Amino acid sequence: MSVDLDWDNLGFEYRDVACHIKYTWKDGAWDAGELVEDPYVKIHIAATSIHYGQAAFEGLKAFRGVDDKVRIFRPEENAQRMQKSSERVFMANISEEMFTDAVDRVVTANTDYIPPYGTDGALYIRPVLFGTGPRIGIQPADEYTFIVLVTPVGAYYKGGLNAVDAVIIEGYDRAASEGVGSVKLAGNYAASLMPASIAKAQGYPINLYLDSKEKRFIDEFGTSNFIALKGNSYVTPCSPSVLPSITNKSLMTLAEDMGMTVERRPVEVNELAEMDQVAACGTAVVMTPINAVMYKSELHKTSGEGIDERLQALYDRMTGIQYGREEDKFNWCKTLDI
Ligand code: PLP
Ligand code: COI
Image (tube, rainbow, N blue to C red):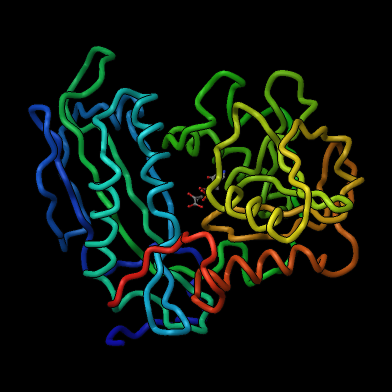
């Protein structure tokens, strides 16, 4: 380990690393990609990404395991999701092979920045695809840039399975019912900055969105999916405006494997107080238990005292697989000997 970082207190911040990888699509084809040290990119002033939001990103992690191997969690799932995002806003397609190869190359070039085993950190991998060709009329670009940057991170909402309170900020939607919430477009996150900052000012680190049509059903958090444990069930909303989370998909498999019933269905906001345990799940937030949700000036308790043991068991299995402590029964991790 040649870099000197405070590995135990990384937080979720951008830090410069050795390099990123950058590809350009021009005249109908991608180039071979190159590792670039300079963390700045020069683009045309009329690039479609900066005017018309033609941009999508992904988020995944590489973990230094107990056996010193590096595991990348389900990169082909992120590749497939990026293809869906890219199709939705008419960008150049990235094959699964190109995506996963880009991830392997950039992780391999930045091994010194993968947090050591035992620090609970990971190397966050952020692929981003954006239109860089100039247009002034509203049209897709004729040139695209695909970058994969990496940066070492710790917890998004401070520390392991520590519970936080959430809030539903009225007057703001994350995604329209037939809009773009189910794909990972950059603009979705621009729209979330205002409600997230209102939530923060009220003392809540995370905000929950309801469906935009009826305001009756739970969609998801601004950063992550909504999951709940109720009796022997693992409950998560089925909604066209929710981002299909790879963490949630994996947890559903684990929950079933642990003998729970998985319910993917509309979840009414007035069911909140009936849940045994609510949590947020996603690559950045991992699993974050939600103690209570503030809605219409009332605090709805969504968990009992302490952390539900089934949530703890799901967390332990998930992180166990990622850090190589548990058998990777479903073959989720891509292992690199670096
Ligand atoms: N929902 C939103 C809005 C997100 O930004 C994320 C993060 O990527 C997720 C859910 C979780 O998805 P995943 O588990 O694939 O990281
Ligand atoms: C992720 O979990 O990777 C995301 O993209 C969410 C974002 C809030 C960082």
